[in-house]
Structure formats: structure tokens, C-alpha cells
Image (cartoon, rainbow over all chains, first blue to last red; front, side, top):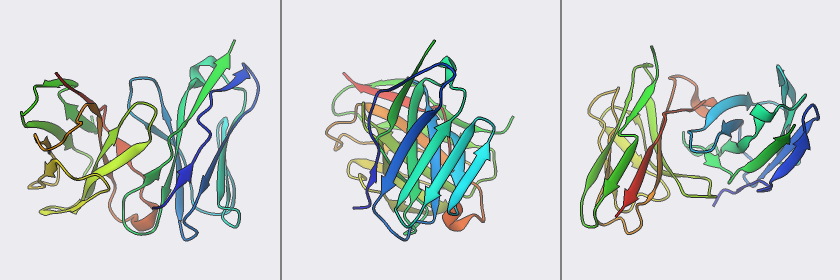
Length: 111
Length: 115
């Protein structure tokens, strides 16, 4: 079984701070990595994709990938209350076209 | 507007009934997927289809069936054999030609409750 592990949280950060969300995966040959944001009662929304080692920035979001350590993270700068949601890490295990999802980390940004 | 639609938004089923959840996309995506989400759990793959008239079982296919007669449509039937069907059902699709880099985009979901 290909595992994707996330701390369930909740992770609480004050407004304006940096939120750091982490994810580890077990399949060393995984090629692609995704972060989804899911508001309560809604479907997941893709916010970041990363395929190569290093950092990828998009607005207030930065995804970081370290394949040697099998670790992917998401940084949210200048966190806003509207960022409060569950963040799902997803990994393509390279065995087909379906993604393996972690259980998600709940983020709470307090005003 | 391009997108993925799912219907109904809420569905109530009596025990012993089969129900069909609709998923339609007008994004010209080749691959489509069905996931199930239980409270506090990650998404678990039920079925996926890469092309018309072809589909593969996911991790939890027992008690479910699908068809892919059209590129735009991938309906999921929850049969009476599914012992614990109450969950949030999510349909997704991904663009062609991405291979292992496939980004998946989700519909709004159907919340199924067994009475």
C-alpha cells in the first residue's frame, strides 16, 4: 500500500503568519505531487502542483519537494482567516493515473 | 462554462436500493475518477477510466459499478452490496497527455446518506 502521511492537526496560526504544512510519502518512484484545499462540506480544489526537487511559488503559496527525503510541504505566507480549511496532499505513485491522498491537515487561521 | 458537474447534491437511499450518481464534464478530459470520502479520512479511489468503454477498479470497488459510454459522462452506481455507502462521493477528471503529471480537478460532490 502506497502511504501518504499528514499530521491531522489542527494547525493554528495567527493572521499574517506563515503556515507550514507537511507531507511524507512511501513510494520512492513517485513523480508528481499536489496540494488541494478543501473547505468544510465542499470538494477539493487544486492549489499547487510540483514535480521537481526544490521550491515552486505561486502567490502566497510555496510548495517544496525533497525526493531524497520523500517529503513535500506547503507554505502559506501572510495567512488569512479565509485560508482556514483542510489541506490534502496527493501523490502520483507512478503505477497508473490515480492519486494517493493523505487524510489532510486542518488549518485554522485566527484573526 | 467549462466544468465538472455532479448530481444530485444530496441523495438519500433506503437499504437494499441501488442508486446512480451522475458525473458530467465538458472539459474534453480523457480520464475520469470516482473517490469516496468519509469524515476525517482521505479520499479513496473507487473506479477510474482513462478512455471511453474502459475502466479499472480502484482500492474499494466492491459494491460499486460504473460505465463509460461517452467521454463526457462517468456515472457511478452504488449497489445494495455496498454495506456502508454513507459518504461524500467525488468525481474528478484530468486533461489528456499529462501521463504521470496528471492534475485532477473535482466536481462539487454528492453526499449520500442511507436511511
